[in-house]
Length: 291
Image (cartoon, rainbow, N blue to C red; front, side, top):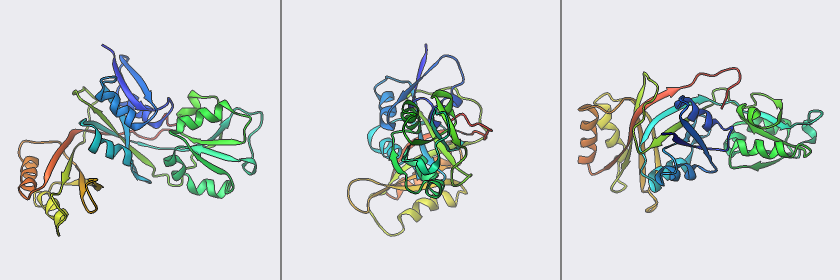
């Protein structure tokens, strides 16, 4: 039976590359969705078996819409995560000659891609209008369909393989240590490539705002020498000062150590929601990153 993999599209996005890295068989159908919530809801509504969405970027931080939807809207366990290097490239539609920077009237892309290329755009096209699109691939599509317009787009290299585009400049990202982490979610377990690294993610809700709340949570891990790779707070949306703690633990779920830490935290009055224990992958950079 062919499995359907929802990803934040359209075709030619970094998210599609992440999905194709995790699913290498020929039996999958990769289905682009216009928004991150659409991807997640597709799994809930059984229109797709799994979804791949971006979670955080090393430059711009967390993708809040992903976090909030996972916390408040859906109950989908994390089955894997994948971190890939991100390269941003400046493109135009197919033209007889390159568009000079001083003639550019508009630059289109997703807000994350624009933010990651802010310094370059400000230096070379300070007067160009910035227009945000739902994805980098959507920016590529718009620019490719109107090559006569004085417009450029910031896109991953894979978009050049999908749309008729002309490369104006490669690797315009401001920081070369530009990584994005994607997560795979779904209701069923799935066989994935072997990994030498595993993570466990939990959501901790504090009963009320009191001094030392976060310290008490962290102490349960610290004395057990459990390494945490990420801690973030997100509003519970029940009032000012009420937050969830999202915690990534650098090991898979076991039978004693983590359950002991969780029991200690719950004994202090906190609530814990298990978000997943899963393999973690890192994709190495290539000369032309298909993302």
